Image (tube, rainbow, N blue to C red):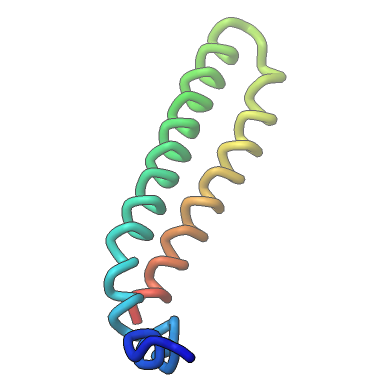
Amino acid sequence: MQHPANLHSAGRPRDSAAVRRHQRPTALSLAMACMIVLLFVQLWLLVGAIEGVLGGEGAIAFPATLISGVCCLGTWWLWSLLRRRER
């Protein structure tokens, strides 16, 4: 035999609008934190690539550019994920 409060809550869908509205700030904060980390990694790679080229090590520029592109794609993916979630 179930308690009446459990009967009422058992019929409510887990993915209701209230649950999504409650989770939105948490998801937004997590995604923004990841985007900030990715942008700082891109900045670090840019500085490292410029120092390498100016220091005579031109071979560092290509790998840094590739990794920076991956960071850019990750940031774009997170942004598009957030935009889809808002709709």
